[in-house]
Image 1: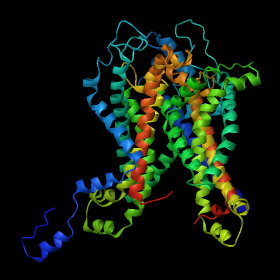
Image 2: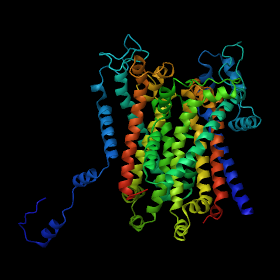
Image 3: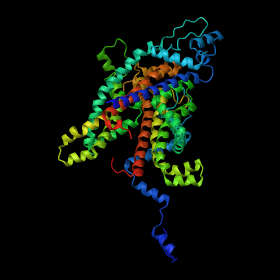
Image 4: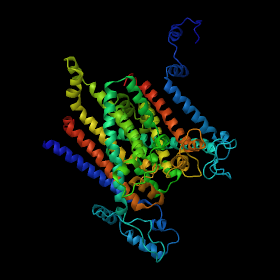
Length: 310
Length: 325
């Protein structure tokens, strides 16, 4: 802040009275008030982001590299041992972050894009188009998501592309409902009417008039839905219908190594304990991320809604 | 009274329409399959004659509408077609495919047993916890319960299941291999861990919803009024709050039961429990479309009727909903 007064005009004086905080400063003030849980969430997400971006540099071996010894115990060469067909568990855990988180993020974005834009269009249009989309969404939501996805995967076969499309469409329904209901309140505002009378086109009204005003709930919903999508894809992979080998991902890692828990008695800090960790670590990675994101979303909703005690 | 029947009738009609459209979606999944369906199922080795016979047996040579109504008529009469697996692929192979219903019924019974036991434990538990946390809001008990439930909701079901196996696997069976002749008590013992997993997940969700409903209720003006007029705490809860609380609570229960129907899928696979969820996952793996369709229809129908039930209970217990503005 430059408070030294050299000029003597009124403008200079008033502008020094209230210096507008930069975005960076506002961010720092916000962060300084963040509760411990939110910090925990942010640290977790930051670590995951680093692992996701630099997985090939961090991983000791190649993603699908197979070694001669399957089911190897923990050792210096294989820090977390190898899985049944001899792939390094640590490597697959690191690459799994990239695949599992990346695919879930892409799917959520696709869902937001489809559901959000359809919701905006429905809110602005409010005619037969709104009716058709709304009824279609009602019908899709009447089918349980997991069953819907399993059925479609049985038809189209389990590939990453069909997985992203199917789960994306399933979750677009939630984004559609939220976007539509929130923007219905904004559409009736005078400034939207003014923009319409000005002759702005549909895209302008959607992007410049309505979107900025519905952004906070949409962002919170994005975080929350990301968790659901992430868990959903992990469950599908666990059931063997999601991300397919040799692509490493946490859900299928749990499935591939689950026999160590189901069939071997678990005694802490014996050999079986370390084997048991092979399926538990990927499952724990999933749980840790969802809890971390949950905390951040909680804090975000708290900050943007102004609610103090619920 | 007539108004009530009218509104409920409308809801049921709406549910039937939804079920109709859902059945259309499930049915048309066969027609959606890219490429030749018969070829995809029977493989490249199938001869032209078997392909033709297969298409005829499935009515694939008939128009879609005819096929749909035949399928619906079959479902109504308890006939969902035969499985693909075991169908003869060669020229003179023996057809060992079985009717889908015959396979599905015992598994459906198993799933209902698991869901029933879970419901019997989790509903009272969740309601009690929900009440207590709402009444002692912001106490240590409330905060702990909140933190625990928030983390259980965030965890994948299979993680919870394996944690339970690790903790209790030494004392309880980790594989729930029930058979038709398994006795009741033995059955109960076998489903202990699956039930615990499901209970953990569902109690968390149900408790939070109950808590929110009760807190919402306690904030309403007439409770304030009762308090100001000197009613005791017990009187406020049992005479003023509870009669109005049944509607949201019943909705919460029905809603969570609908979730439970789907939630069994993962748990059944973890514990290799011979239920309809595992059947569906296995059939998706082998792409046995008639079985997948039948399972999807059963799941969707249960889900829709549970949500319908939640709606109806809500209307019956809350007369205000009879007069929509």
